[in-house]
Length: 178
Image (cartoon, rainbow, N blue to C red; front, side, top):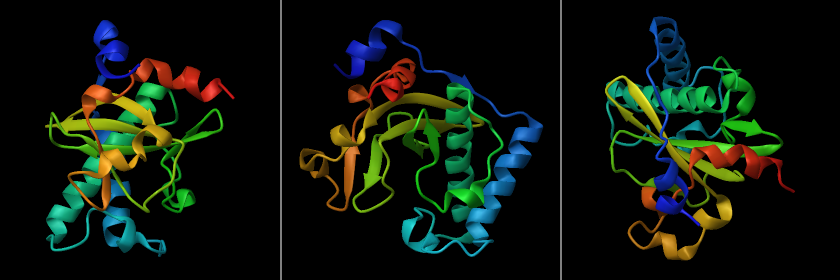
């Protein structure tokens, strides 16, 4: 069961607005990512923030991405100050031994998009950033996402609609199953 069957009954999409110290932390991590401080290998190949974007646009994209990770950590009750350099730009977090990669969009109805050949994780979680607010929408397993039927619109990415995402309240139980 997915989408409305999972979240429609509960209709719970937690929202978080970072306070001043959270914004400072998110900006600090985003600036490190944007400027590639620490010499993280393959950062340019893995980032959505590269390409024909201005430095300001890349900084905004990285801020939204880090803010989405922050909101997911708030929701899952994980530390909201993490060692970003230790991740080596693999998945964003681990919960009960399962890896989760957070995807953030500024489009309220945006899909969960995972680059083919990109970051590997056991599950992917979608956050929507609107203004200063971050809303955790839902999640899906890598098996659900990485299905060639999900590549129709974008040949180099899997596209998974919000309506098919599982409710965030179920992710912890999933991580505890074998």
